[in-house]
Image (tube, rainbow over all chains, first blue to last red):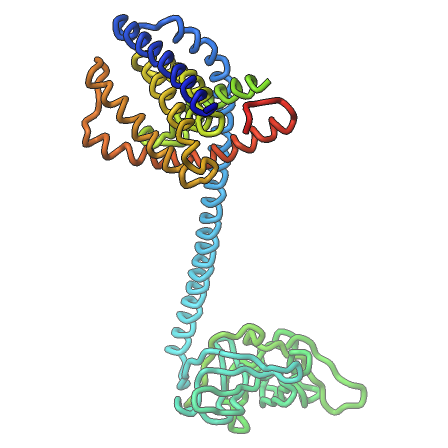
Length: 270
Length: 169
């Protein structure tokens, strides 16, 4: 009963307010929607609040926009970093190709002018221990290589082949302690044997005490022993020494070929 | 004291409706907070509060928009009353009837505005356009309505727990 009374009361309110609404609609339409005092009052009351909220919203919106801009800039920066790294790698590759090109040009010129039969090979590995001086090249028996073939660069002698595989070979460098090259001093024709020393240099042993050898003299292979052809540049005399009662003197030889940075070499096949 | 709660509700609803919502919702999908609040007060506070709050929300809405003053006041008070009347016949706190009620209220709101436009020099959209846009508008109202009802109900219960009054639950 109370519920029905409540509903009836609310219905009366609804009817009254509907009447007010229709009245307002009528007035509003009659006045062609010109502002009534109610509208003016409502707008005036809401305006300050709206302004504060609008300003806050604007600030918030700017903050959010700034954040998104930052995220976008960060993404762009990461993309640019990636691109830069890629370009750096590309530049390094190009520089590498350019250097390789220059080396190969020099080698080609050397090969064309050399009376020897030469086969170019790429160094694919270096000795795995500290106690030996050797390199691995990408040519083997399939290319006609055999043991004891000489290996050189345009600068000079590198060493000789000591093991031949099907498609690769091991080359003992002239600085290895087991290496021996019969050499002569180009200027005075004084002979000796160039052997490897453990510290990456070579020594020319068995030089006569009266042999005419000076620092800076060029040492070449003599062709004796049948391993190295005659006339290959072995190195340059760096220092001379003789031990007290010894019958011979010896010279420290700086190898002509840059044995620590070999990349391409020639194998003397004829 | 609960008059303060009601006034605060009105202010918050119109501040959100007129400043924040235009930033986040496209015009056709912008929820009508005044409609949702009218339904809410009808549903939880009863027919009488529904009628009065609907009228207040409607008259402010009319004042802040283009159109004859009183049209929304009439519609919202009618919706407030209807929600209050129906709450005795449905499980008012259950989300499903709430969604149905909001959906129906949204369609009726659009329909009355559209019909009024045919009798008053307001201009109105075609029925086909109404049929296309009204369900979307109603759906966005439903989505927001569920969230809003939850928030308002929680705020109201806290208000009551502090002994600040309100009609019987």
